[in-house]
Length: 257
Ligand code: NDP
Image (tube, rainbow, N blue to C red; front, side, top):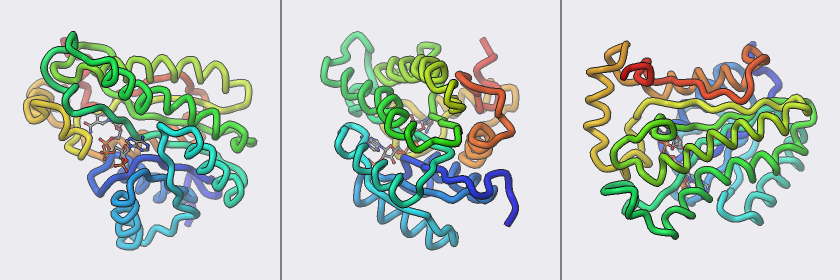
């Protein structure tokens, strides 16, 4: 099979089920010939992923457990990836976590624990993953994370996660500067709302989908395949001049006042 990513080893982190944005990304990367390495946290996610891979005929190079809130787990996962894959060309960070109780009501009521948990899981995790992947990215490459408009604007109920995404987007810029000299690019995709397991935690999610359908220039929502293709572009050499960028894949919703 010939493709944009032939011979490239790409790590995909954060697939919980067939609705996950990470799964849309994996399919886009696979279609371009990437050799895929998967990480998961919960056993349940591993079982779902294994089933999805079998059903779609995708043969992973490796599947390994990685809890991004645990340094030892990150070290062990990337140690195994290094031992079995050698070089890594791309990393897709498609994960976030916040306590459901913090994703509704007022931001002013955010607890210290809830704030720290969201920041650690959703923003610092990119920094830790970039650090662990860097020694394996000896041929240069690309790191892509997933963010949301709630980083830039106040979106009702997104609260603590909006602040975590703001830190994530700032981290993309600082990491882009640090890793650019090694030929490693760092970018984010800012996806429109998509019904996934994580999205279920945000109060009033249906209203958000309806607003986008009504107001976005394309008058519709986006899906996992569109986010997948844009992420694939940022992983591939087609985007070789782009780093530190946040690319909106949201049917244009972010340009509307
Ligand atoms: P999913 O629930 O499908 O995926 C979230 C993933 O995060 C799961 O695979 C989960 O693994 C993983 N995860 C959470 N905490 C940890 C951890 N400590 N260590 C390792 N993995 C962890 O939701 P999405 O696909 O929607 O989310 C993917 C990314 O896209 C997130 O960053 C999200 O914020 C972002 N995004 C989502 C949008 C949407 O509307 N859905 C819009 C814009 C951005 P496990 O279940 O095994 O714990």
